[in-house]
Image 1: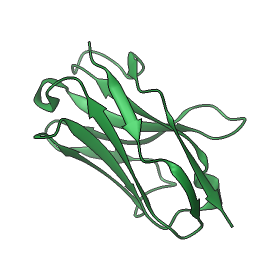
Image 2 (image 1 turned 30 degrees about the vertical axis):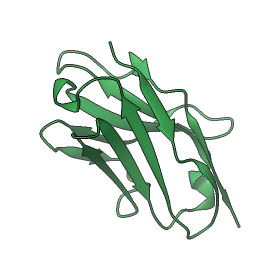
Image 3 (image 1 turned 180 degrees about the horizontal axis):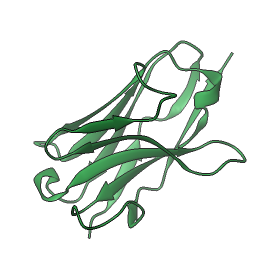
Length: 119
């Protein structure tokens, strides 16, 4: 099992930047992949970005070129750098962990952090 704690959300103007952090209770080398999902108001949760322990990254089309996922193994922390934020990026952002290649997303989530982008 793993516990995930997000931080770094807040209110930002359109065009601004935020960096979200996800602290894990396990060594990141023992986790197959880390991910970020978000749930906009009134919508379903959606994939934002994922990154495997080998460094392979995947992004939603809507955030490509603006968001960057990274991980600091020494700090057991994953990050989501969000630049050029748009109103449509307003959502609750969740950190997620996929422990093995045989497991799927959805078993482990953080508590979520609110990101609000204003005009």
